[in-house]
Each structure stands twice: as structure tokens, then as C-alpha cells.
Image 1: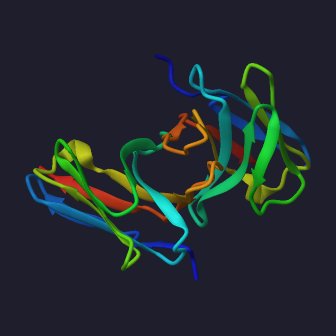
Image 2 (image 1 turned 90 degrees about the vertical axis):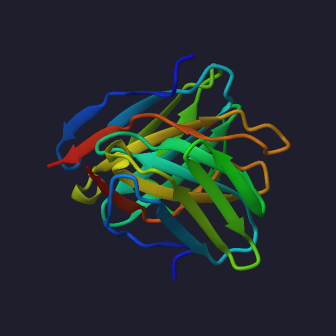
Image 3 (image 1 turned 180 degrees about the horizontal axis):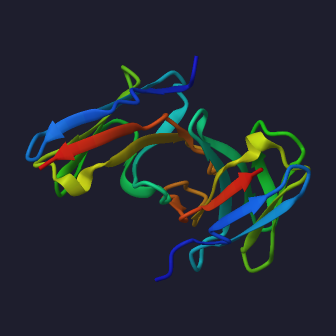
Length: 112
Length: 115
């Protein structure tokens, strides 16, 4: 079993929809949680960064972390065709090491 | 502020050859990590360097190696290339402060094709 599970999709939604992306994990030592967006043939771009449990909002994006359930989510409001990309969840421990463990990524398609 | 810069962006190698990839981190960032991304395995951690020392290593064979220079720039090397080494190799950098409250930024990657 992988440490981080993520539905690969694809997830197809119409423009303007609210998108919900999720990851589950098994390692309770993870303390830092991130969401990256990756366009085709590009490197991952950091979207959201959260420490421990709670919510964080940035524009149309909201990240939620529920450590008791080992479950993290990313919500995208008013989705746009330009949001079409692969979304990767990533997490790491609280030590100084910078090793990230990634989910497989969810491919999102937003149609006009 | 310049981002993480990786060179070359694309390269094709033959089985058995070796390859060296280069990464320049964001100015001021002292930690450089390398990841391999393939369709089947996703993003997998290769190793991390901090102040010219390897601090952490993923589960890859010894053919994969790296180093970091005093200016924080890093290189990774893959020797005796195999077809399965075809992948996007991503470099990431961070401040790596002791309190760990810092973010990790990725470069655009180096696309390696082994034929």
C-alpha cells in the first residue's frame, strides 16, 4: 500500500464548477501538506502549503487538512479552463529533511 | 527573482551511456532535492543535498548519484543508463530552515529519453 493515495481521475467538470480533490495518507508523522499543479511537460507549481490540521484559503483555492482522518482536500471555486492540469498532493515530516512524498496526481479537465 | 533552473531541458541517450543533469536553486536556497517522475511510478524522491552533504536518499540503485557545490548548485548523474531511466527529472530547492517552516519549489525538469 502506498503512503499517499490519490484518485488519478480524470475529473471532468464544466467551467464555473466547484472542484474537490482529495488525498489520503497512512503515515501519521506527516506534518506539512502541499498541493502542486502541473501542466503538461512542465514542472510542478506550488499552489497551497499547510502545516498540521486546519483550513487555508488563497483566492479561489482552499486547502483542508484533517490529521485525525489522515485526509487532505483541495477545493477550487469557479473553476476555469486554465485550471485544467494535474494536481499533486505532497506531504512531509516535521524534521529538517525536505523529502516529499507525492500522490499519483489527479488530472482535472475543465470544459468551457 | 529567478526560479529553479535546470539544464538541459531535453536529451536523448543510448543504453549504457551516462548522463549529468544540472540544477541551479533559487538564490539563497541551500537545500536541493532531486525527483524522478514517470507515468507508472509518479514522483519519487531521489536524494537531497544541503551544504554539499547528502542528507537523505531514496530507494534508487547506486547508478544514481549527485553532488552539491559550495554555491548550492547541484548535479545528478546516472550511469549505465537503462530504458527504464527514461523520465522527467525534477530539481527542487528550499531554504531548509531549522524550523522546517519553508516551502519547496520545483524547476521545469530535464526530460531524459533512453533509446
